[in-house]
Structure formats: structure tokens, C-alpha cells
Amino acid sequence: MSSILPERLLYNTLQQRKSNGEILYYEIFKWKMKHAPGTIHRFCDSSLSDQERQSLTSWMRNLDDRSSCQRLQILFSFSVPCLHALEHILNLSTPIISAGAGNGYWEFLLQERGADILAFDQNTIYPPEMRYMEIMESNPTILCNHSERALLLSWPDHKEGCLFSLDCLRHYKGNTVIHIGELFGETLSTNPWGQTTSRDFQLRLGETFRCVSRVQLPNWPGHMDSLTVWSRAPQPVECYGAEMVFINSTNPRYIGWSDT
Image (cartoon, rainbow, N blue to C red):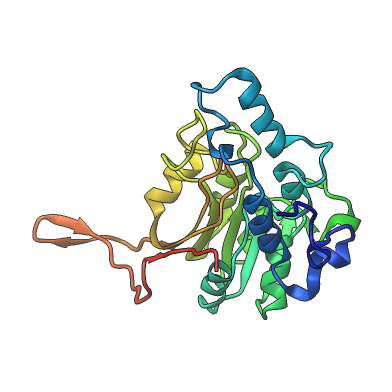
């Protein structure tokens, strides 16, 4: 079996990575995982030798290897998009504002499929030649002016103490949050809140919103990412001794992912 990347999956230039709006990253992900070491998901298994774990970790995170998972995440995005996930967002039929958009890969794919989407980031680490669409330089206060849009957050916090996602939630006055990444307990990290958003953000999200749907995402080894949609909780009503909130949702709550 050849481990040379097929020409149709080349991603040397931004134009190649855009791939006319096709989800090239997902196709590269499938190819990469097909050729992964058989024990790749055991990279953090203490029963393996240090040398074995180091070899597996290098396969994922060697920045000198342009095809490593970490290099691909820098070029594309931390979470791997799939058609189910994109269609689920599009089916919300609402304009979107993405906070902490990075290079804008997910946002570009949504825009190519007709989404009305704005994107901003206060971190300008990605130079213009790496961005897939226009990314405004701004901070969470901009959200005060966009309550009519759903708030998209995809891996916005770079560490647990980061306040970016929490500040976004504090300033956002709209009714829908789209979260892409890990959540409490759904992680292999020693931090139970995951690698995506902080503990304080997730607690505030759970206090003020309710998760109404979830799409399982393709995952690189070491990740437990999903796409979840959250609706703002209204004032509770008393129901036979219990206070409840009404969320009007007619869509399926759980949507699987397949590698077809």
C-alpha cells in the first residue's frame, strides 16, 4: 500500500487547500489515518515503552513533518470538518459570527455553501497568506452588536486560564451558540474540561444555555471533538414542584459521523 499522498490531495498552496470549497482536509484526514501506525491511539498508553510512545507522538506532532497531524491542524483547523457538521450548521438557517476564527477554514467552508458569516480574532498569529477568508481583528466586545447572529466558537482558548471564550459569552446577547471541540469529561487531557474552552466558560454556558443537538466529528488521535448547538434558556416555569425551561427543538439531538 502506497503512503505517498495522491496528487488530488496536495495542499502546498492556499488555493489547493481551498479546493474550490470541497472538504480537502477531511479527505487528507481519512488518507492519513488509513496509513497511521496500528497502535497510534495508544500514544499515551503507559504500558508501552518510552521509545514506542515517542515514535507515535512524533507521528502526530513533529512540526518538521509537513504531514503530521499538528502541521495539518495549523494549515487547516484543530477540528476536522465533515459534511454532516457543515450541513447541521447550515440547517440552523441563521447568520453566524465566529469568534477566535484563526485562519478561518471552517468559516470559509460554510461561506462557500451559502452561509452569512462574519469572523474575527484578537490574535493575529496567522498571516494573511494563510487565511481562507477575511478575518477581522477585534475582541469580544464586538459581539454586543451582533445578537442576531449565532456565535461560533471553535477551539478559541489556547490554555485553561484563557478568558477569551468566557468574555465572548459575557458580551454575546444572542440565542444560539455553536461549540466545536471538547467538553467536560470528553477529553484525554488531564484537564477534565478539555483542550478547547475553559472551565469557567463551560459552567456559564451550561447555566445560561441548553445543548439541543450534537454531531460527532472525525478525530485525530488524542482528540474527542464534537459539534454542539446550544440554545439560550428562557425564564423557568414551575411544573408540579420542579422549575423547568422550554426549548423549542424539533431536530434530532444526536447525529453520528461515518467515514463514507
